[in-house]
Image 1 (cartoon, rainbow, N blue to C red):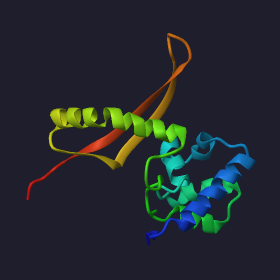
Image 2: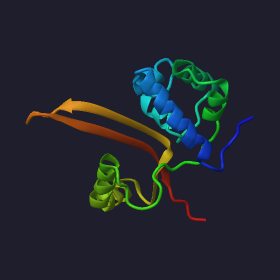
Image 3: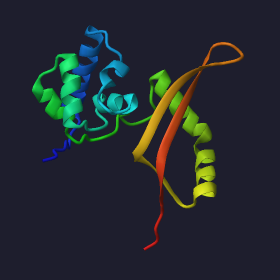
Image 4: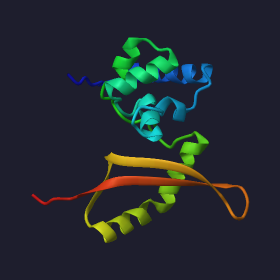
Length: 156
C-alpha cells in the first residue's frame, strides 16, 4: 500500500542524512542513480524530498549510502512537495532561476499559450535534464531542458 507524508519534517531530516552520507562516501548524484532505471534528475529530486522512489531504487540507494531500511521506506512515501520556504530565495543559484522566471516567465507563458493553447505544463508528468556545453566564446554554458506534458484547460 502506498503511504504519504502530510508534514515535511521527516523528509527534511532524511534529506540531511542523505546529503551527509553522500559526502562521507564521496558519491555523486549520478552514482546514486546508476542502475535505478531512473534519471539522475528524478533520483536527486527524490533524495531531496520531492518525489517517492520505487522500492527497488529506494533500497539500492540506501545500501549505497549505508542507511537503514526505515530510510528506504521513507523514500518510498509520497512527499509533501515544495523545497523553497516562503519569499524570495536567498541561495544565489536558486535565486538566479527565480530571476530567470521574473524576466522570462511572462514570455514563456505567452509562447506556451500561443503554441499550445490555454492550459499548463505539468511538473508531475515531467522530465528535466542538465548538460554542460563549452561556450565558443570561452567557459561553459548550462543547457537546461524542462520537458513537461501540456495539460489543456477543459471548460465544464
